[in-house]
Length: 231
Image (cartoon, rainbow, N blue to C red; front, side, top):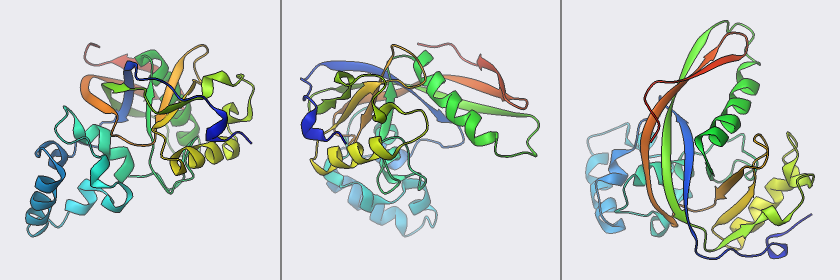
């Protein structure tokens, strides 16, 4: 097993990255309406009095300390949401007990990653004959300082196994335990591409919506169409 201490720590290079999220999940405006954690706590308390759906919208705030939320940046909700709305089934670097913000070096890489997982998920729904899935294309900026560099590992290392996530989840848990900012790693679905798994949103400086695209399901994902142009 590889641990966080086995991987070098990256310096503070600023990175532009890309991400796709399902359009059925809207931005959480409450994160974007305030400048700091004190304002957030006050506004959250006020809105909770009249909005019974607030917890569903904001997510589980116990999973993300307010000190790690980058209040005041453009698109704060996009940065924070993966840490308060956690997939209990987990992901490559998480066992489902904590969130991870996954980012890619291009929309092409982001599409390859999302397409694989959508294909795998919907193929388990035999009654699904045709569907159209719409995604938001996000463009983000963050600093690599404090991330561990898993690109020093060969592409056949167990953390890059296509479907067996036991090894990468152990690494992800250790990186989070050591309070490192995340992991830079080789994309598993797009050869020669780069992805990042951020364990905290605090290093994000902006993340905005730039486009929409759709994936067409017809027994498999047969088409991918841009609905609005990329930026």
